[in-house]
Length: 522
Image 1 (tube, helix red, strand yellow):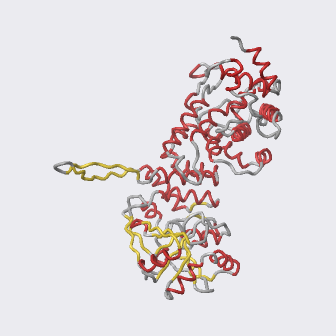
Image 2 (cartoon, helix red, strand yellow; image 1 turned 180 degrees about the vertical axis):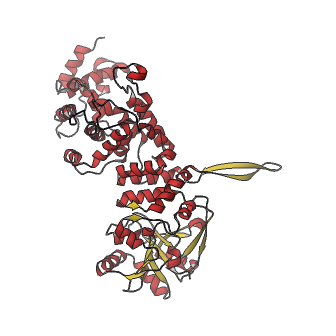
Image 3 (cartoon, helix red, strand yellow; image 1 turned 45 degrees about the vertical axis):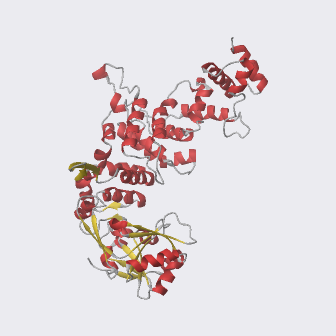
């Protein structure tokens, strides 16, 4: 590869100095090891050049022996060595609060076994290896740059054209794309994530290999081990995923949260959906009654619903607060059940295309997808499959001609639940309606506005005008007053009383007891 060296422009140089000034251990390291070569590498360099906030700091330290570096770091903070697989020190400096530990490594070369697993690498560290060689082993050009820290003469080292790709907005594999993905199939999802995160395109050769190797995401490794019994060894076959579901979940959720519609398009066009969640592809070419859905089939409608989350109309209604992962996924999944329950005039003699029970069926399917892909795995953006499933199951509440007659305590269960997010349900209803374009007309928000009015009327019953008022009586008070034992009867009385309270007909404890006297029959 052609080597590229460049002094940083003054603005970038000043920012680098500001960012690194918090790390006093770098100065001490240079003082102790005069010949050491310190380089900031990877995503931190990319983010500096893009003028973005740095999330992770990675350094490569050359011309210092591993043992000497470890001894030095232990005096400067907390150190954890991440084994033979990666050969990296996870370092937390004293007196500094960081989201993640700093990665510190010696220059190294990777020799992949080409299994597609990021763990199947032979790592060779060499303190004297030039930083340029270290950069040549990395995944994408925009991550394969370094800033060499030499007093005030900081240099950008770019061996693969990463700076130019940053300026063009391109995700490109370092070297031969086929080799990069065969080394680690999870890079397929990383490439898509970077494209979504930075709104970049994926370079043509890199994209072709993503499409070609997408099936590797489901690859299973089988190894034979010998298990010792009392007298002899027995062979045992162990199976494991080359790309763990936890890795898939992390990349998928990040892509969807960064740019939902782009994530859907890239996952679809690359064949990743086919490998990871083939259930969603049934939405394609699933017809809808044009009188209600002139926008197209279920896939088009679902994609449009997701796109509407970033629309000016949505932001005008709900503001610019961050979107939850549950809302994003439910916007895509909300009509997932339609292809599985569809009834048509031609086949089933119905009056029109119908999807009876699609909300319940879709909730079951999306829950299975979330569980299978471990989307609830602990991470910064892990989601709750139960909440996604609930949103999908509940989204049809807005399709009701008599919203004025819905019981107040029913609305409480949907929009003021202590566990499920009623505000997310409102947002889902809004984008669903916005994506439902009647034949020759505009989306009809009449019933949605009625629902908002009902919710606001209930809120007015509380002093804060934001949340619901507390129950006037609790179960113990009712049992004491009417000499009842715990059981369904107490729950029924509480439910009746709550309806009267939320409807504004009962406001005091006296009115509550008077009401219960009239409905309770011994």
